[in-house]
Image (cartoon, rainbow, N blue to C red):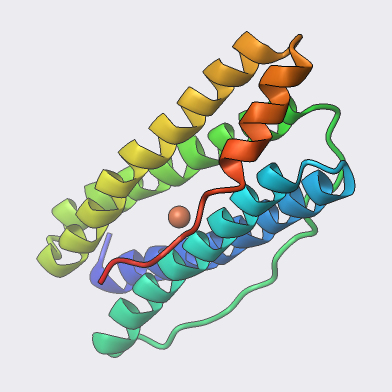
Length: 167
Ligand SMILES: [Fe+2]
């Protein structure tokens, strides 16, 4: 893979981060509709975080003189059967993001392109946390699925999440 192809791959990931925000926003809207206001907040904050990831890639690509391009985003899934399904979908999505960055890292090493490698490294570190978050939330949900009080508490805790970009 040459450098141009690698940067095209990064531009594709830039669009995927925006698509991630779109998917999480749809999850937030579903939760709001179902009166899980804490879960709605959690996914709204997650969408903000994905837009932050997108701007991080955008800034990098612009800084190195790449012509950043927006592509079409498909309509996200709007209906879910349960909270567990939403969180499982989100976890699968994060695993896909991780796989994408593993691919970018592999190609950056092959070119080699050390600057892009450092970017991929930041995102892969971030992905460990993202996957751990969803893994924990799914484990909690599975434990409390039959407890209305537990679900009430779960929702209340997620109402506290507030995304703030790193300084
Ligand atoms: Fe992301």
